[in-house]
Length: 84
Image 1 (cartoon, helix red, strand yellow):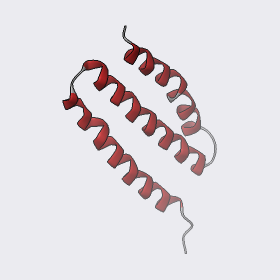
Image 2 (cartoon, helix red, strand yellow; image 1 turned 90 degrees about the horizontal axis):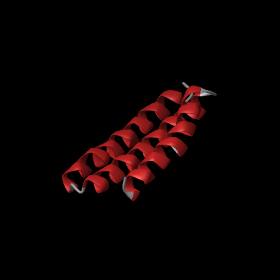
Image 3 (tube, rainbow, N blue to C red; image 1 turned 45 degrees about the vertical axis):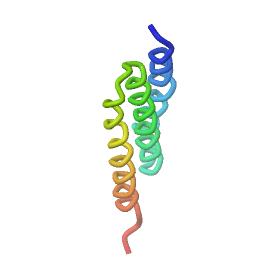
């Protein structure tokens, strides 16, 4: 087991655990924060996994996820705004 995989394991436990807790509890804004934290941690996990595998072609997946999570945040924020 390499240091990259140990870092992935630590991020999965210490990063995805709180994001799952935030994403399932609280108000709508708190759940949105949990989803955003989860997407950021997932991007980091995928980057570390591509580094552990030694294949730079796997970097396209986390880069696409960054763009999609940013667009999703904008959509969810728009849905959470009060109606005029």
